[in-house]
Image (cartoon, rainbow, N blue to C red; front, side):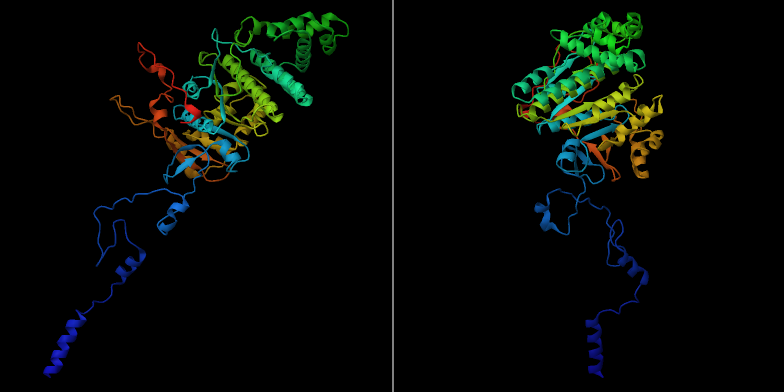
Length: 527
């Protein structure tokens, strides 16, 4: 018995205390996984503070040995670095040229930016063209209404062309570098290419004259008037020695040569010709003698555009109330810029110059569209062939309502096509009323719509004078077709942040005795 009792005590000591009945609820909770602060119940522990794990980013070669403690990031890494993904904090790279040429993510190198004022649209555009300039792409800002991109272009060693009343002039009848390029092509035996350059220059000049008449009248010229203008330009090229201006075109029409009377169908009756050209002469007289469009287009070009560097057309001297003049100047800058691009491509095709690619910025698109009937067709003709001529472009407007606030239904459909045809659409903060119009052009999920609406809220109330940014400043949603949007927070470099490149409120700063000097050119076009 003693041996039996001793064995029983030893067995109980080695076996340990009796196990309680299993708790089914606790087992189920353990199998379901830990809570927010750790494993609950017996043997677990509730942490008072859950530490955040530091995340690192690397290539697949660098982190391949860390499996399974790694996860893939879906944000693209080809293009200009813009900032961080709002949710994953991964680096987001994006620009229309890189996504078209290298990544093959879009079908044409174009982008459309929509967003309320003051949320960073200009900052995003500057980041793109600064990064593209480092890749050898020349930025062309064809009409800077607020002077926002001048410092950035100067930092790149680019050309600043000032336009405005008493500031600078742009002769819309100036063929630019087309005549010189055509001569080089003919000397090298490329006669067909030279003919195409001259024909393109003639078409752009005619298009600009018709556009100015449309803005001046708020109505396009008749078909017969356009035919007369076309023939008058050809007569002017044949008979005029030098570069003509609008006054010379008016003199040709007034002189009534036989070529113009023939297309005017006067049947030998000069009074019929005078009746057909009376309204045209009156409009051209207003364009040469002042009028609401001033004399900006009536004199020789003061600063011819170069094709081998970044260029910005500074039109900030034009008052905001002169909407017709702003629209006319924007169209003239766009036409002049695309004409220079065509000349560069023709010379490169003939191996007379190196191949150059351009990134064209078309700001305040809505101003040109609202300037008169038929202006949508003019803008569409200027911008439709960007893929075939080696040009990436980005168009900027505030809202879809700005594009669709046109009187004619066919113009509204064409304006919406600018957004639909873009390779990518980049949206900033937008009001809730815009969602119906925006989703009719590009698909947006309900979550994406709510994100855009939340970004347009004003900053928090603060009466202490503290600089409080609105919640949506620098935040954009990149949309490509039906793919989920990429929300990105733009990150600025020290040069952009402290160098004054993104300060668009310079008129509110107190003027010092010594004006700051222009930024030093960035060597090699890099940041």
